[in-house]
Length: 143
Image (cartoon, rainbow, N blue to C red; front, side, top):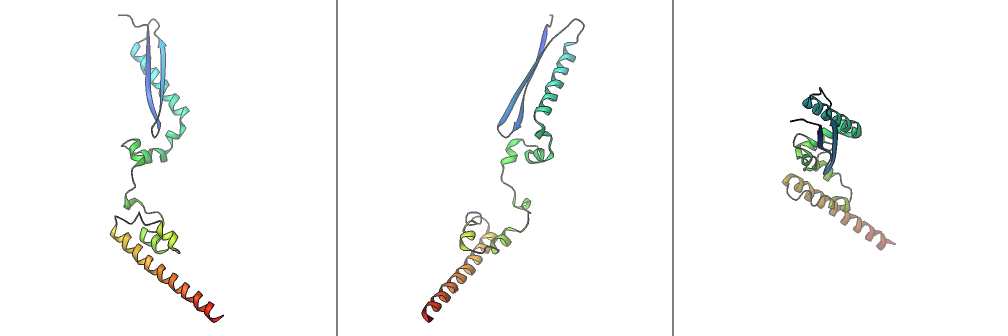
């Protein structure tokens, strides 16, 4: 059997749910080893992919993607990994209005500690609002 040409095709994942297909082909000349030519085509395709998609080389991208592939990048973050700034109960307790506190309502639903902080802050803000209403009412009565 005489091999006249070889080609190499590969689909590269370049982002979540985004792929790019790269293909290269070479003609085998007399004395060429088809396997070595195919290896060269693979290296060429890989090199092109690195040049065309430099964002794939950034460590942040690979850290987000992880060893499980792109699906890992869109999975919910484990509570223990959410160590950015204040803890969730601290964030809840720092809410300065009912409107801001209400933005946590769905987040606290399935966590008893967060729900307890939410309920406590809700009661505190409710008392602050009641006092504010009473103070304004008394001020109007005195006029």
